[in-house]
Length: 279
Image (tube, rainbow, N blue to C red; front, side, top):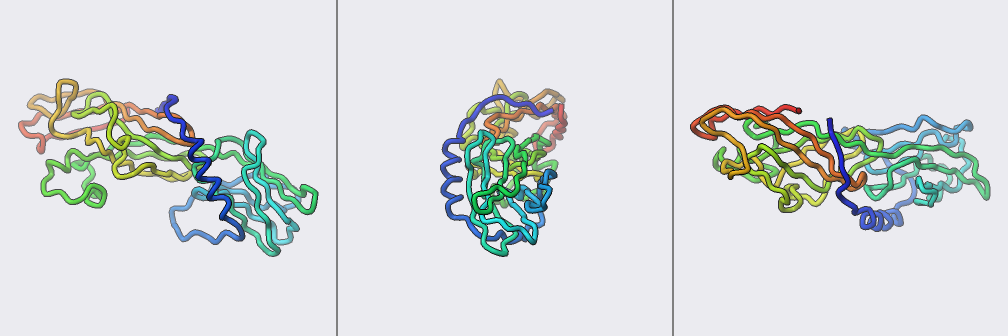
């Protein structure tokens, strides 16, 4: 089970960035070529069929209008009742985007279709991320991952065996921004405050709704050398537990998940087997 606790508050900065992005977006949304695009569909369409569909696709809220809709403007209202953005609708346009990025406040949003001075249709959509820590993987157990692409080429497996990724999945209806990654407990090299907040070569990693991401660690928690507080491969078999922490921007929380770990007995680290399972 993935848990959470309050940790970060970058929404003010992110909201400023999103405001600048919104100012430059208008007109019709063209379809994405990405095969990984996931849509969260709104089931509360209006009776007149003016707002045919409201959906989150990636980091964009897309409003699809009926073919005979007479709409001059769309307003997106935030959960607190304030205006998030407005779009003028040109004649014949049937898809209108609102770029929400990762600057939005989670909750229930309203889309208002306006013609003249009258609101002709209204619908609602909950936009909320739900991140889950799925798995932890090491090079020795997952050699087909793009380790060279992420960390650069390595001459020996000694360095490779220190590298690790964490798989996360967004089960919610809105995109999430991942800001940090850290490990504690029975790993060889637990670091409370890793450099770059623990993410390798990234300030943030955006995870759209319905998609998964691999987070690569900058702290190398499974390095071969470990101190008094760490646990790793040795002559005797050993078992323990460690915890993965993932900090988020939209939810403004630090999620955590515990894992069981077993180190097989070995004279050399390269011959040691490491088994990891969710606790």
